[in-house]
Length: 158
Image (cartoon, rainbow, N blue to C red):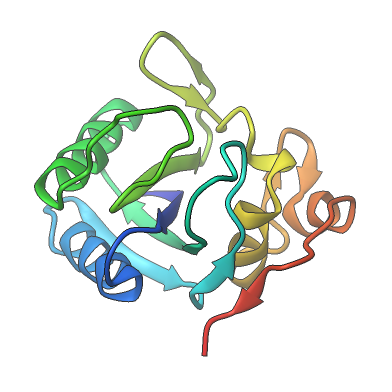
């Protein structure tokens, strides 16, 4: 089994329920075992800021799926939960990103690992730092990458 880290987000409908359902479906997938789950964090929109706030979380999983098979599983769960890709960085019922996959560096048309923007986005790093502060991505600890970013407006959901 290999440890991988996923980032989840939602800003349409019952955001907490959507994150919980996505985590449940991932955990129920053969070849995936949930190892850790962060709290949910309320975060301001990023990129396209003319939309509702997000709820974000991170999970650690142990998996025997390949990086590409894991990506396909995430995309399948997104589709099953109503994800519609209308505009870049736009509103979404659910988003599941493969952030890192232990020992894997991938760069092709379908997948880049580690995720190319993980160290630039506080809304990803805040929940990830809760469960894996010492995880090294791109030669830098998650906690150290987060310390360089402005996390204003990101708060643990009550």
